[in-house]
Length: 497
Image 1 (tube, rainbow, N blue to C red):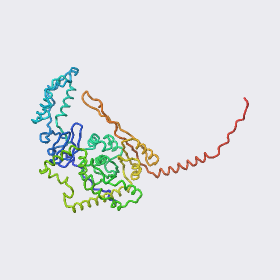
Image 2: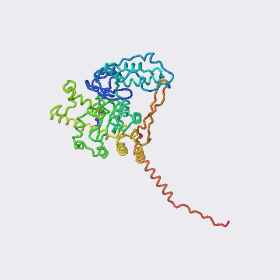
Image 3: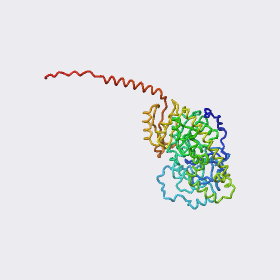
Image 4: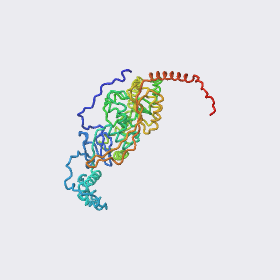
């Protein structure tokens, strides 16, 4: 079991591999809205009230901007020059412009007719500008604002970017902050910095943020080192981790261990029979799903519109070859193969899971972890007090909580317990700025809060105990001195004044 922590050196991704391939996880971007999807041929994707296929993005570089055309196809958008000098004619102020709804000559029926003809969004925006009677009277800033508003409404432009910690944390915080315990992206960056996450570390993480914190740690470690994830329930949730699209080599150093067996490890009563005595249904279901299907189920929960669209189209196109090619991923286990093969595969997965749990238990029993990260919806005090025993001295630990009161209680308990130094409860303040020529200023809307962090370092407890005994001895001596009878006070003789 000593060699369980050793692993072959992972192969880092090829830096020249910047092209999108079939099966890759990508992030779709439109303005400030993001969505993580997996590239699959003939798979309909719904994003910002538009549907399209991702077949044409295969082979293109990350960061390419596409335009949605008729039939849901994506075509690379060509870079065009700035607007002509006619659109640059601007007025001095907007005081004489009256918003009476009569400045636009084109009606909604005319715009709909242009869309039906297949005219692109850029041409529709240009015609709106030409048919506006007040456009040239607006100031240059007002014209840019008008064009930006119309482009957002009529141009179907999507950029495909590579997943990263920053992009995925912004996406989750904007779309589903409850799933990541309202952890803001700058708070996550502070956690990675305070926790000294780097390649070659042996880290312990307990998080209930859909795997976002775990994925951020794996990205920073680059596949070198080991991570032990503690989980509650039937199995770890790694929906956000799957969005990163890590290679298989990154998973060799990832271990998971049930949280309800931590006390047994600390007491020395843990054995392999405890893993076999666990109920098989929950673990087998979790293991048979795998990370890919966890991602698919999370997408179905997160995107109701996409699920409804896929279900309606599945009934209509049931006999097509595209849907038939996707059917095995959505069939029941009995339909994918015989029941006997399915049971054997389930048993094999259970055995692999128990083997990995034993390896994780061996790594934890060494009690020499390089750091601890806790970002859970549970109360942090009992978690931290029990998990600190697995961390080596002079190592950092970071605890995240949406509210500061649990961290203050945890801070007090740690001060009473000892074995830690440099305790600090912090909160980051974030405000976005608009940076444009002659228009740079802080944005009016900002985040109210991104959570609180409790950070510190572990120290050896033996020296502290010795110091405590010395302090106790010195305190007893002082008490003995103070308990000695004091000198009698001399009474002042009474005198008549």
